[in-house]
Image 1: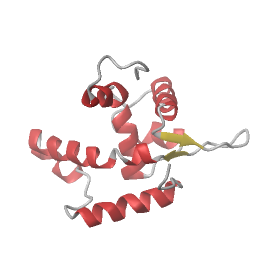
Image 2: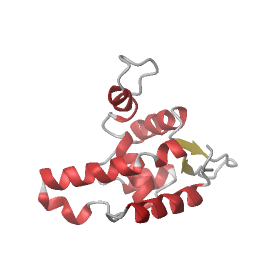
Image 3: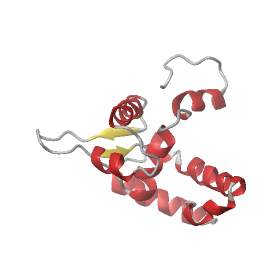
Length: 139
């Protein structure tokens, strides 16, 4: 659950209050790395087995906090979640969490995010995600 009022003025604490629950970073991972953008894709594609009610709450939290937007759709159609610039800002964090995860458990190496080590390559990949998700650079 994301806290609307910060416990302190520490930016690390605030980031953890917004994204430090068990599921938010995994949802962002699935959107960023696996292009799972519908509720159904996120629910069925999660290897960790998130439940529908938890996914619904976390997606709502991520939209409310400005990490994602949800497209308006007609009844019977699935909405699509898109990254905002705030959501895109989590890409380097996901990469570093992946690197740390490999240090903690080397058997996970084959599943680590591969955005390259060159900052230009990372910027190019983030720009491609920005385009795919319709996030304007000024957002």
